[in-house]
Amino acid sequence: MFDQVARARILIPAHQSVATYGDELRALITARVQLRNVVRALERRADGIDEETRSEVTRLVRRMDDFVEGLTCEFRDNYKRLSDQQRGFEERAAVLMKKFGADLGQQSPPELPAFVWSSISELPRLADFMGPATDYHAQFERPLDDASEWLRKELARILGSTPMSSTRGQRRA
Image (tube, rainbow, N blue to C red; front, side, top):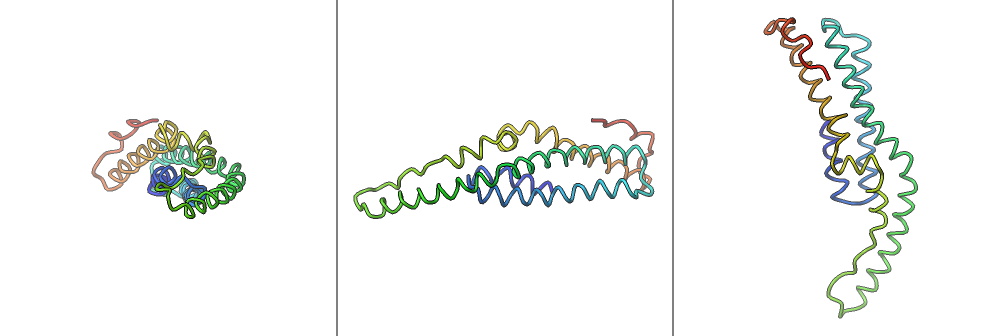
């Protein structure tokens, strides 16, 4: 699931298209289902797992889910409008490219309009996700790292290599 999120951070700005935005956000919807399944598994049955660990990992995974939910809700609320803009862009681009193809004296292709990419990149959650990634680091990546640490310590405790008292309460977010 981390791979899907990291991939979207790279591909959406690289392609600068509604199609890629749609493809990658649909993959994040699938990632969100996976996160919710982790929460459900931890809430329903976690035999042998320390209660503090179970509770903390559940809290951290919920934070990750909330982050992905923000991106997918923004997608849901804006995709249709962006898709309609994309159709207009394609029509305009076809006209410009046809003129370029007919003018054998023109050496460089025309600069295509960027209004669709401007609209995509101005979406607040997506802009942060692709840019400084402040929310991404705080609400997804850090909770993932913290949950992994809790689970590694819990596995060590279960396997008997680290007593529970030495792991308890060391990593609270």
